[in-house]
Length: 312
Image (tube, rainbow, N blue to C red):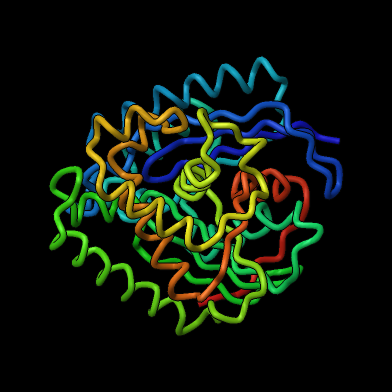
């Protein structure tokens, strides 16, 4: 058994999982999340904002203290959409190396998809394959189709932060902004569907903060409770209702929802819209909300050899 740490740094958040791994068994020790908005402005400029990098490295210093206190033996750090896009990524990569002493991996959308699938399906015991795992991040959304292993995967740039920055000038957005976002999202989903058979899956699984926040709303939770959310079955009609509700709310109204993380207030409407369009495009009658995701896949990959499908 080895104690490992997985750090996932995306466009909106940086997350940490400390776990004991023994074969295919993963025992969670600690799980942390900070909203740092590393990808702020990257879609428009192609460059990291220095303040956003500093916020992210400050959070990483906290994680380093946690990893030392928990006796972590091995670390894997994966950076995703924003870091893939930023032309000045070296300022971030160098900072990460200095703090935790390892080289951060800037992984492809395909590897991100593979790791998300591994983490998302590991606790599905009663759901019927094949699975479609959807990971709505800040910068990108991954579509991953498979059974025990990944068969097809595609990453497209329709994350909640990217859609918010690209289309919404204020909250609530106006109808024209929503329509333009819908057209952008639908085009990307259609692109993904050229490779991934999104309508053929028996079970749709959605991971990450957008999906779990939509689930919290659909379940009418007073506060965010990951144990109530994990593996909850959320009907498609509830997804449409929640997305419409969020699109009509101001930032102040969204911030008063007990389950809403402050760092998601300005992007949740865009993210929920992405999820609702995915539900429509797949024809799924429900999605399974999963609190296990890329972090779990990363943690398992540190110890176990993970064969990644050679995807396009």
